[in-house]
Image (cartoon, rainbow over the protein chains, first blue to last red):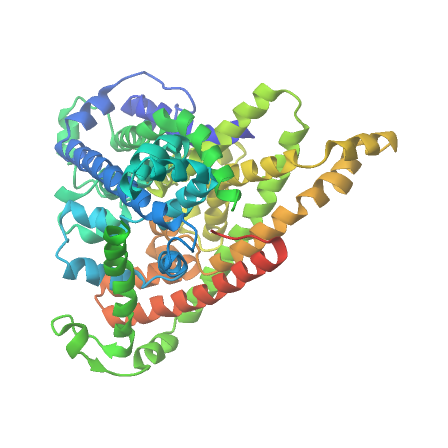
Length: 273
Length: 285
C-alpha cells in the first residue's frame, strides 16, 4: 500500500528521464526507458524556469529571516505570565483571532494593492509575515522553559532583549528549527499569491510558473517550434515531468529533517501548557 | 518588542477585515472604501439569487464532508494495521513513504495527477486498458471528479494523520493487552475492545476540530484540478470567489460571498473549539 502511494510520483520521475518516443508509445511505467537527460538539460536552459527559481529562492531567504524574527519577537512577550505583562491576554487574542476569522480573498487583495506591493516580491512576504500558528508553537515551547533561568538572567543585569537572545533562543533550537522548516516549506510551496499579486509572469515564483506549465496546459512559455529543433528527444510530457521533479527536489532533500522535526512539532503542538 | 508584528497583523489581517464592509457597498475601486455608496444587503441578495449559488454551496459541503470522513477512517485503519507490524524498520519506512505527499504542493501533485489520469496514455487508463475498459476522462466527468478530489486529498494527507493516531496508540496501557491475552482474546478482539476505545478520545477531538472545515473543500486542490467541464460538480465557494472577484472584477459581490463563508466558518470554529475545550480540555495556548 505504501508503494501504491508513491507510484504516481515514481511514474512521473521515470517519464522525466525517458525519451520522447518511449513516452509516446506508453512504454514507461516505473523505470525510465531509453534513458536521457535531455529534458532536464532543456528545462535548465529555459530562462523563465531559472528566473522563477531565483525568485523563489529569494522569497524563501527573505521569508525565513522575517518570519523567524517576528515569530520570536511576538512569542517571547506572550509567553510571560499575565502579571508581568498586563495586556498579554488581549494581545494574544488579537493574534489568535486572525486564525479564526479572515477578511477573505478580495479585501486582502485590495489591501495588498493599496499598500503598493503588487508586482513586488514583498507582496509574497509581508501579508504572511506573522505566522500565528508558529507563534503559538513557539510560545508554548518558551513557556515550558524553567522560569529560574530568566530570573537568573535578570539578576545578572540582563534586559528582555538579552534574555531573549542569550537564554531563550539557544535553548529553543529544536523548536526554532521546526518552525523554520514550516516556513521554508510554506514559502517554497506557495503559488497562489504569486498568481494573484504578480501581473507579469516574469515575476512568478517557481510554483506559480510551474502551474502555468503543468496545470493550465499552456505551452506558451516553451514554444513547440523550439522543441522540434531539439532533435525530438523530448516532448511536452517529459518536460513537464522534469519540471515537476525539479520543483519537488528541495523538499525531497529536506525530507529526512522535515520528518524528524515535524514529529517534534506535533508533540510540541499537542502538549499545551 | 511585539510592535512590528502587531503593525503587520493590523495592516494585512485586520485591514482586510475592515475592508470587508465593501460587501455592503456598491464598491467602485476608483472611489475606494470611503466614497462608495452603501447599499445594505443588496450584494448578498444578488448572490443568493445566483442560479448556481446553492449548487456551489452543496458542492462545498459535500466534498468537504467526504474528505473529513475518509480523512479520518483511512488513517485510523492504517494506524491499526501498522501497529500490528512487529518489525520496527518496515513500520518506520512505511510511515516515511506515506507521509511524503503531505509536503508537496498541490501544483506538483496536480501536475502528477493530470498526467496519470490523462485520457491519452495516462497510467491509470493504460491499466484499465489491460482489462479491456475504455479510457475514462477522470478529470472531465462530473460523476467521477468529486471522488478524484476526495481520494487524492486522502492520498496527500493520510500519512500525517496516521502519525497522530500512532502516537496516540503508544499511550494505551500495555497491561490491558496482557490481561486480554490471559482472557483468551485474539488480536482482532484486542483491537476491537482495547485499541479502538483507547483511540476514541483523539478520534472525537479531531472530528470536533474538523467541524470548522466544513466550508473548506480545499481551494488549492480544486483550483489545480478542475476545469469548466466539471464546474457543476466541483465549483466550491472559494473558487467562485476567485472567479467572480479577480477574473470578473466584481469585487463587492465576491467579498459578500467570502464574508458569508468567513462568518459561518467563524461560528463553526468557535463552536468546535468550545466543544473541544469542554469535552477534551483542549486549548490552543
